[in-house]
Image 1 (cartoon, helix red, strand yellow):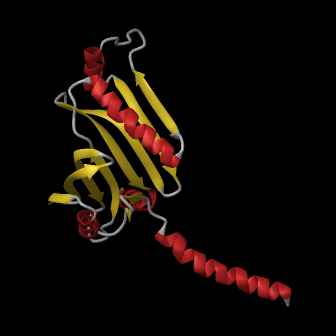
Image 2 (cartoon, rainbow, N blue to C red):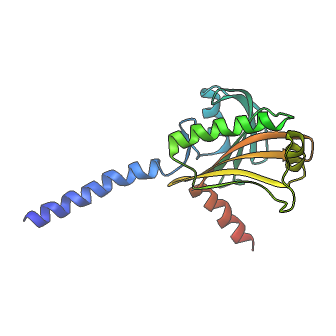
Length: 197
């Protein structure tokens, strides 16, 4: 009899816990699960203070303040319709044209992420050329623009990855980017690609 009651309680607990796990199975951005259609997610982002700029195909562009930084650009990526699902959110912080400012923003965000999620699962902060290490800040910025350095910290959570990087865009601008990749919906992107092959 005790075994039967215990089995029933365990079964009931599984049914109660399963829906809770299902709703928390997505990585969150600003407290909002990275899930649903692009229009639904953009609507939720507007509710937390972002301004919608434009939607193009499976991507949306927003702007607003994030983590104490003003006028950030938010890019939301989703899978193609008809099974549209948001899978990735990227925050592009205001650009700088000097290495110390980029490194300061990167280190500030890395410290905040590490305080919230623990240390990064992976951290690569290096210049690529073995025979040359840039000494001046202008040389470091040049190496970044030439894609000759990697400055990335990755935080791995059960629901997905968060990555932080110093990046360059075609020699024109340099900035810090923070990406949130939801594993569950990213798998949908991969599955769709596999269907095409």
